[in-house]
Length: 113
Image 1 (cartoon, helix red, strand yellow):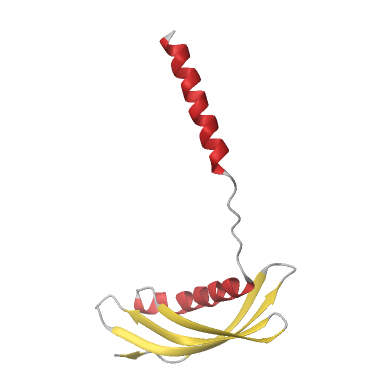
Image 2: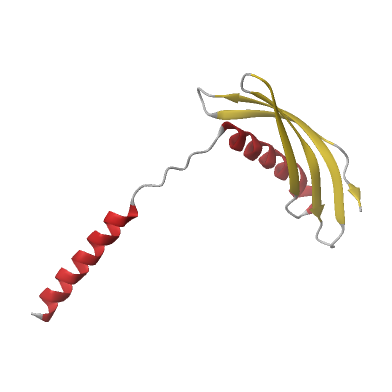
C-alpha cells in the first residue's frame, strides 16, 4: 500500500513539473548573431597566441540590408599576466536563408599595456 501511494505521489510530482516546464523561446536577433560571429573570430585569432580569452567591446552599425560594420576594442591577458590591447574592424554579412554570418575582420596589432 505504501509503495502504491509513493508511486502515485511520484507520478503527480512528475506531471506537475512537466506542466510547469513550458517551452522557452530563445529569440535571438540578427545583431546578436552578428556579435557572436565576430566574437568567435576574435577568440579564434587571439586565444592561440596569448592563451587567454579576450574581452571585446563591440559597436554595431547596419550599413546595408543584412550587412553590418562592427568595431571595438580587444583586451586579452596572456598566461604570464600581461595585458594586451588593440582595436578591430569587421564587416559581417548575414544570410537569412542559412542563418549564418560571414565575417571579414581586421584586428590591429595588440600592444602590451
